[in-house]
Length: 485
Ligand code: NAD
View (cartoon, protein in one colour):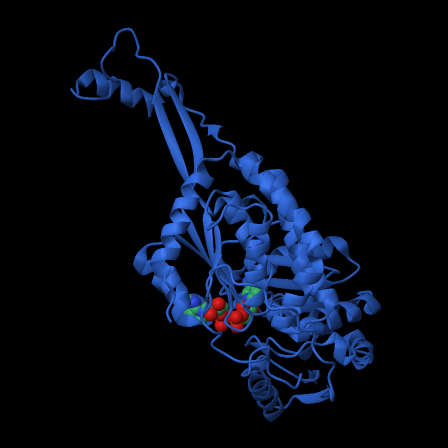
């Protein structure tokens, strides 16, 4: 049975009109309640996230639930300020006018979510869209739909008016139909699908925000704190088994410290337990990783470390949340693919190898040695992606200078991935990693369109029924305009 978008859109439109009429502080009141409600329902949410992804509890709580509660907290406190209408400044010849600049919601926003963060990149992104006065329809990944369904139910239970936040299930076809129906698209996923989404949105002339794939470089300079850098590298690469868009995808380490850095990274990788690694969600992932490893080895790389974990703990399956719309189509795909893939560390890599160019999105860590910081910078920027990057050094001033030269939307210095949790800072990709951002004022404003209201307040005594530059044109007008320009 297909999705009845006609009915879903009709109910969303009615709900949205009433919602948009409410002042921002009424909308944020609900958000405050929702924030508390998320806290009260932590365990249910963890269960849904784990039923979707089988990721460790610490990751379900941290980068998923905490990211959403922080987002709720930020927009609960800042929506009023961000959306506040302003009076535009005018040139003195328009002093008899009042110009108001306001923001209107797009209407119904469609959120297309990826499989890897099924709660934060659906429910978390719905928050600013709702606060801007929109209704939202989420189509989560067909692989991980349960978290968003639960999140939408919790929103309803916490007092969000019905039909403002709805979830539909399905794959590419359902996503494509969603684009046709909604007024604005917020897509998070691969660059390849992002292009298709952008093309469809362009045909229909609809606003489209794209959060796409990454290939984050980590540069470890010779003066880096090696212990912290090694810990950051192992967490930044192997958390959720590498299935994060801002995960470290490639490392460049200074020749002088390369051996000790690589040894530390291997020591820490050896200590990872199967419980700390997640299974790979996509059935195609293991073969893709193998292709990247085989290609690198064929071109001269060496496998410095590799393991495949044996028996795995039984994943924590929670109760399946009730869908928001009565009956939903059965998920297109079946259960998660096992076994979990082990970790692999490659050395002797270079930029002729696919592993240094393509997003691996798995527990595969290629490490390349460089001679000079300039070379490291050149290699880091030799990429079609520009989502995030990481620099490790004790030279704070030099690091900031290098950060400014890196072609990426987010650069961390002596840190990794945590910037995603700073909701007051925009998070978005450059180059093929996306268009638009999430978080901060920008992340709310892009769910709105500006409206300028231009009001004539009074006429000048000698020009009662018109402005002097309206018809009829005279030499006198030309003279004045010449003087003014
Ligand atoms: P994907 O592109 O395969 O799918 C994303 C969503 O798009 C899914 O809901 C899918 O059903 C839908 N979809 C697929 N084809 C479609 C079509 N033709 N029209 C409309 N919708 C369609 O991505 P994925 O594999 O689920 O997620 C992994 C990717 O997402 C990685 O590349 C990762 O880097 C990226 N990602 C980016 C960010 C970011 O913030 N930049 C965050 C998380 C993940």
